[in-house]
Amino acid sequence: MNPHRKLWRRARQALTLGFFILVPVLLFTVLKNLDWQEVRQALAAYHWSTLGMAAGVAWCSFALFSSFDLLGRHYTGHHLPARQVLPLAFVCYAFNLNLSAWVGGIALRYRLYTRLGLKVSTITRILSLGLLTNWVGYFAVAGSLFVCGLPRLPAGMEIGNTGLRLIGAVLLLVAIAYLLACAFATRRTWRFRKHPITLPGIRLAALQVLMGACNWSLMALVVFTLLPEGADYPTVLAVLMISSIAGVITHIPAGLGVLETVFLTLLQGTYGKGTLLAALIGYRAIYFLLPLLIATLVYLLLERLASQRSAGERSRSTG
Picture (cartoon, rainbow, N blue to C red):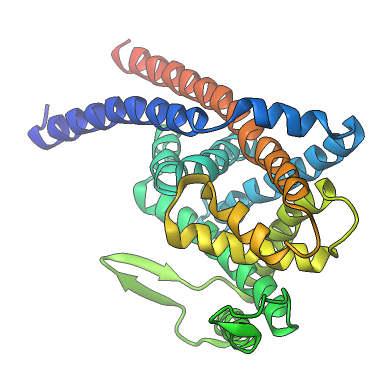
């Protein structure tokens, strides 16, 4: 065997072993830090129809986010069927939310797509387009809300409402600039470390903005469904926009504590602390924990199917 191929094979085996050790450790860390009694009590306080509605909205959000990888399929031209792409993307999104982007969004996606036969360069382009879809949607939604003065910040916050409007204007300009570049740029391809970066067409770019914006809106709708009457939906969506970026900045897996702090700070005049915490615990259970449990089972199934395919290919090559 070629020495380089032998070295690469050993490196892949080591990475696989490390991955199988890392994922259970991170899962244990996340689940250990939860107060399961508190989760049970918060969910028990809701009517089953409310929980069912929130779960339905969460399912729509996960289905939409998983479809980002279908945009990646169109963008890269690979031919994996949707029945393979969607479960893979669902697993990556659930792990991404709970265990950080490095584990779910990057490492897991590279592993699973590689086992399906895609090249690293193709996976990189799929990953890049998915990240861009998510964040250009965020810029469009957050920018629009911040420009409109939502959410109203409490007195004394350093950034102030004027500063938030300026940030919103910048976010909107970035989203618009991206669309204009995709529509009118004469140079469509650049190279970054020998990897080509190609602007998508305006139709694909517009679909990116729409899908990304809709997914963020569905996430906020889960929280809004679990809250009693009080704050309007645009305000809840705007608060979620701030809490999400705060979670990214702090690099805390699942934004544990960050989400709750931002909601309690910005909506304390509308809801009591207990009401807000119950809704946010329900949100975590429905949008984070339940998908994570399902994704773990789906991941094990995907690994088993990939192992069966690899064994079949080896038997055919030696037969």
